[in-house]
Length: 315
Image (tube, rainbow, N blue to C red; front, top):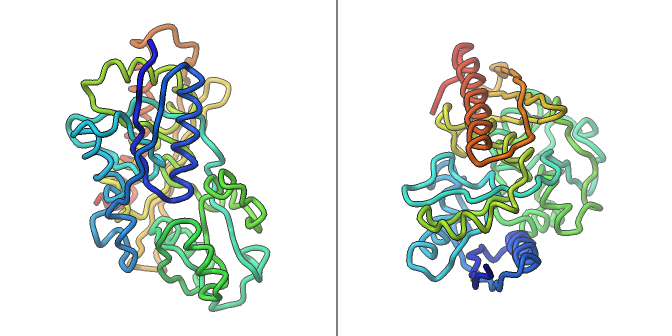
């Protein structure tokens, strides 16, 4: 059945790329799709860290309002910006195939983090990246960096920082791979839960949309992201949580690594935890898929409990 759909999206260049990507996918399935560009509170407040002004939910509240009042049918998000608990009445209809989940080092002067001189200034507003950077290079100076991807690059180019750290996925999606000087492998800088993945949010009662979006769901990405988000959820995860969680699903093995650090005590060591389990991905029914996601969630919960047992502090 062909549907007429409106996608609510932020108006940053990356958000519009993601929304148009979903639009193209839906149109290839025979649906008619238009975009509704919106400015969110998270886009407007740029002079304070997200952890102090309400968290990453500020990037999706206006889009959820559009779903509620019927001006849009679905909202497209960078999944790492989506709170671990959606408000009542909303559901993640699907998660698309993940782009590169890793972090990227971007600098006009230095090829890698290792090349930075002592005391160099690095830009990031992510508490996760802050604690991981502190563990790698405690001699560096870290200052906040807010704004969309283009804004952050402009601040770097204006000489405000010696280097910045961005998600590799966004740079690659916008054709800016040439700005990447080096990639942080996960064992060096563990990604955020959901990083590199795109999620589609709908009203929970829109069964027509839930059915239509099901064909876009990427099983391997969804399983991995559910495990990651479970770690963060159990830890009370938000942008106020200096937490990393990254899962992979290869050859039927779901493996997840997580790390937590105290951003208020730079000398404190990172706390690490990991676990794995067997996952059958040959899904034949929605019930089987739900059971697989439950298993992934349980694994993430167990990894979070391991962090807490070692001294990590839930938010």
